[in-house]
Amino acid sequence: MAAFQQRVFSGVQPTGNLHLGNYLGAIKRFVELQTTHDCIYCVVDLHAITVWQDPEELTRSIREVTAAFIACGIDPKRHIVFNQSQVHEHAELAWIFNCVARMGWLNRMTQFKEKAGKDRENVSIGLYAYPCLMAADILAYRATHVPVGEDQKQHLELARDIAQKFNNDYSARIRARGFGEAFFPLTEPLISGPATRVMSLRDGTKKMSKSDASDYSRINLTDVADEIAQKIRKAKTDPEPLPSEEKGLENRPEADNLVGIYAALAGNSRADVLKDFGNAQFSRFKEALTELAVEKLGPIGSEMKRLVQDPKSIDGVLADGAARARVIAAATMKSVKDIVGFVQA
Image (cartoon, rainbow, N blue to C red; front, top):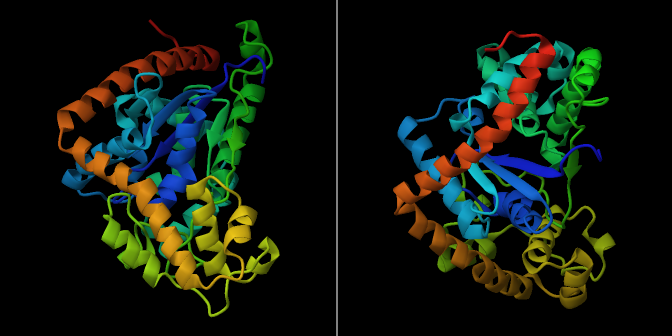
């Protein structure tokens, strides 16, 4: 991929309270990548409406995710932060990708099957086709890397398939216009860290989710110290003490989840955590985890609350980011239209 400018793209849906899983699985990684890459971070509000959203709540959530980006340490001046719906090229490129992607590819998407459940005939077309929009999000910027959780890896593979088919279908036009053998990169995933998939505090076999009925299943980024302490104290465990080696976490999903959370917050490995807490009772470990979580998340929650009190400032960040994103996306779209054969003024 030497011919492509190294660029990171990723996005977060504005659909309710952001939680510890969003932070450890995505936003913390976004912050770290700022030092090594040109980064574009998007509040993917078009994705949010694949299921119905209350308009007032959607507006609030877009601003809250933006506040979380900034509070966690993303610099919107050095990098680009914007909301998807302000850059129409995302939707425009998604239509072209709808015509490149094959039905069989989308039929294999496990997330659609999970979200649609047994009532597939009654869900929106957007929910079915949303992986094509996700591919457009990434490839509108010809991004070379995307930090993703394990559950999104299949969607990134689809984006690579779409990019490959577009490059193959239009190879002669691409070469003739000086782009070499490929117009779109085959974007690589960036999956790393001890807690790329954070699980529920009430059930270590289920992903931590904002849609879970129990607020005790997750730690929200805006939770205060007492709420964090109570949720960790009530987190499901098993009767055995913590093992001294990682192998001992096998078949102990709740223990594995809590150790992974501690490791990610502390910037250590699971092995390092077990060196310190091996053979300890969960009561002692939970006290230490609470102290660490309050130390790391408390300032983020406070700053988020401060930022959302100034919506004009947040909207200004999004408008500035959208203007800068539009320059890149518009250039991509102009070339795509030319490659496809559309007449342009």
